[in-house]
Amino acid sequence: MRNLNAIRKFEADKDEQLLYRIQEGDSDAFACLYSRHYSTIYRYCFRLLQNKPEAEDATQNTFLKLHGTARDIRNVGSVRTWMFTVARNEVFGRFRHARNNGSLDDQELLQSEDPLEEIMRNEEHHLVQQLLARLKPEYREVLILLEYEQLSYSEIAAITGHTLSSVESRIYKARKALAKRLIPYYEERKKP
Image 1 (cartoon, rainbow, N blue to C red):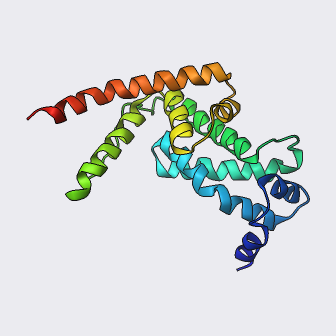
Image 2 (image 1 turned 90 degrees about the horizontal axis):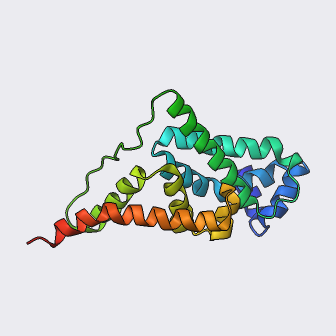
Image 3 (image 1 turned 180 degrees about the vertical axis):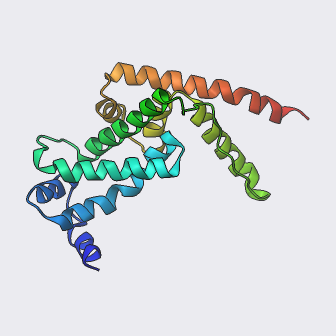
């Protein structure tokens, strides 16, 4: 109940104000920031990793790092961007670890079944998710940040540490790669 009251108490505060309160040792402010951004950071991690336990771990580590380093954070223009950057580092660290151990298969597809009327709607959604999962992590990341998280190109550049032109190029290439994979599906649907 205490955390719920804390969340209500700080819900009008901006993230940067919450960070300042966290730096001052206010655990209720941390609970509010956690509650506010957990699902967004988790979705981002899950869409990249395609694995619930790994996404949960990456999300938890993101917030642990925020909590552990809050006092050292200076001049953070956007706490949300900072959290996405930390989450990104967590995710790509897991990719590197998995590649080094030979356990990552970028071509692995998600498996799911859906009932009838929703099949047409869900079929395309699942197809896009499957094809998105097959893209290079660098391409998948920018599309997720742009399309699902609604971040601007400049925010994506800040999160990934790349230049704006590099982000624009990756988004273009990612969309092109996704479209190329979608073409056979749409050609098959057009057949009588």
